[in-house]
Length: 454
Ligand SMILES: Cc1cc2nc3c(=O)[nH]c(=O)nc-3n(C[C@H](O)[C@H](O)[C@H](O)COP(=O)(O)OP(=O)(O)OC[C@H]3O[C@@H](n4cnc5c(N)ncnc54)[C@H](O)[C@@H]3O)c2cc1C
Image (cartoon, rainbow, N blue to C red; front, top):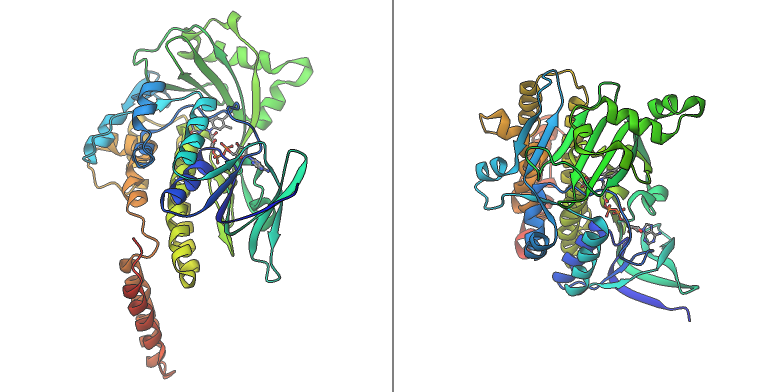
């Protein structure tokens, strides 16, 4: 029988971004319903995590379980740039410069990782419906999102809420309809990948291997366990179309990629090439990550080519920011716009920094020192060491403080707004337009003091 449930927040999608925002809001005492169309465990690509995720995993109480279940990842080995020698960067350098006790990240089998995250959201108090496909968005007369319609067991149900979170990944269930999406034409890529059940590790066997292929594109090697390697080839959609003309298959293209690689081909036996998987891997970003009654996180909001394995980190960081913004907005309706705007601004900055760097790095003709120095600049690192700057940037560690300290209602930021207003008022007085707005500013400040959030 058809039912209607009412909660504070409905989350569409139970991937890492959805289970993060849902779990954290439930932990904060909000009623949350996560709707996931699949039944977990389900397959997913995106297997190499970065160490900037560690503080969130600690907040979610998952560090011990991750350490016990998944392959540790200590850094990245690159064969990239003008210098033909492979070079490496170690995660621990980034953390020790930030004074943190974390040292590593993980390579994960996503079906298991995502199930762990979703189960954890349940443990934290979120309700989860699996095999529940969201089919429509509910809106009131003013256009505010008020819930969703979904199907489960052949019935259509409704879930109403103060906020709906789009965490539906590439399906972009809400953002497809509620905002525009910009596609990065220069990162219009395709990925082709497979798994090898036996391989020869590289020197630092916990590292992800990232290698530029001279004929174009790049290859990843991710050691999921001592015996299982995920290996993929990312190249432009145009190049793949070119290379598969005249009856050549994706298998031929993948074998050529191995032939052209210096490191990847030493790891695997090309004869053992298994079934190939493929997906579009086209970077995109939504014009806005929020609107009346909704926010978007994870791939539903933005996606960047997986060159630095940033997807899960970016999506779950956005989800962590969103959880705090929604919690604040649920606590004080009058502050919804401010909270969501601040979430949007910081999340967008994280996205922009990675995108700018991926674009710079995609040119494989530079020197290692140039890649490292540019990373330090983009991340605005105070460190003198460009090597530390590089690993801090690509691991997400340089942004950890901003994410961890994010407070959508901080007085400090209200002070900035007030200062801006003061300057505008002074300017309008100078122009002889009178004043009066300052009392409004004082109201905001007083009201913030009366309702501190967290
Ligand atoms: C080739 C490739 C390689 C990658 N490698 C990496 C990597 O090494 N490291 C990394 O961090 N990232 C990587 N990524 C990116 C990573 O896969 C994503 O960024 C990440 O999975 C995003 O998480 P999410 O929770 O936003 O979305 P998802 O993990 O896709 O979860 C979305 C969920 O929403 C559900 N859903 C969709 N529509 C509906 C609906 N209508 N109703 C209900 N539920 C719905 C889906 O079933 C899914 O479970 C890679 C991506 C690609 C394409």
